[in-house]
Length: 59
Ligand SMILES: [Zn+2]
Image 1 (cartoon, rainbow, N blue to C red):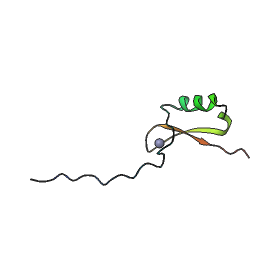
Image 2: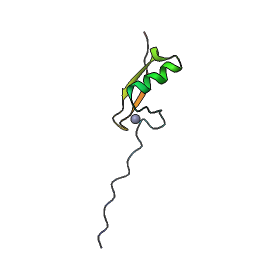
Image 3: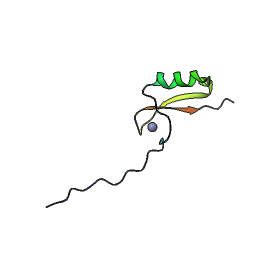
Image 4: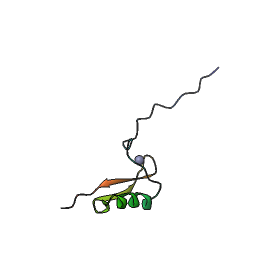
């Protein structure tokens, strides 16, 4: 009996532990609630397919 090969263990995505949002609007809303929308940008994550917030530096 042949054993099916298992795919290699995937590395945890780099966004692990980050808060995820289902939509860009959700992410921006969350930033707005805590009053940091000016310093946050929502981006679509290629790893989990959801949205995260990243910090934007204001120069
Ligand atoms: Zn992600």
